[in-house]
Amino acid sequence: MASVFIVEDDHQIRGLAVRALSGAGHVVWAEATAMGGLQGIIDNSPDVVILDLGLPDMDGSDLLRMIRAVSDVPVIVATARDEDAEIVRLLDAGADEYVVKPYSGPELEARVRALMRRVGAGGPTRAISVGGLSIDLKSRTVTVGGETVSLNRKEFDLLAYLASRAGEVVSRQELYAEVWRQPYGGADKTIDVHLSWLRRKLGETAAEPRYLHTVRGVGIKLVDPQ
Image (cartoon, rainbow, N blue to C red; front, top):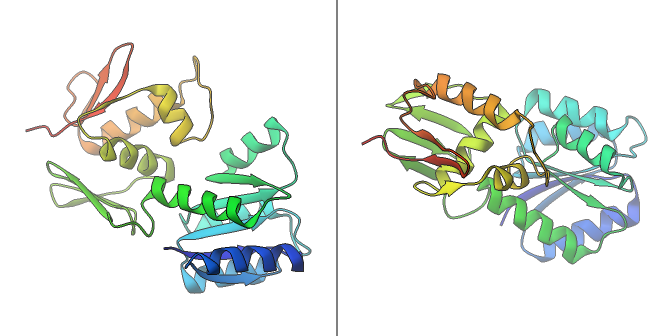
């Protein structure tokens, strides 16, 4: 189970969310304002944040940017804005998942469980090791040969997902869906750019890969260099 911080100003919706999540065994905190939520997130370091966009003292998208400035905590945005362009904007701004209002308690709890599985929060597996590469899912730290590697949020998410499927070829479409939460990609170079950054930080290149191997026309595979 996870610890969850809810930032939601609607009393009824907040109560529904608290009851659904605490009833499923999660530890739950809740605040009705953006600034109260930000302080609570900093103080409690939850596994997951559920963030409403229509807050009384600040737009939730602005709070999301503030959260991202101080924390990599996974964020589920709760919104009535279900247009594709708005959802993409929120995901690009740092959200990991979204749920459209009105939602039910079971749907919200299922979203939390799905996000936990994806990022490793609260699950039995807190670390992944492949050769000299070690990924701590809880603290979101990476070491290679005992040396800490500094990754940004999406670099970490991409590496962790590939490491969780070590030895398997993962398609680009799957990476867009599971890491970027976008069911498309096409000629978009997002994955290529992040792979290039990762390779540089892992001490390899596309021409001389160690961990990250591109299987042309199929996808990406992370392997033990040994």
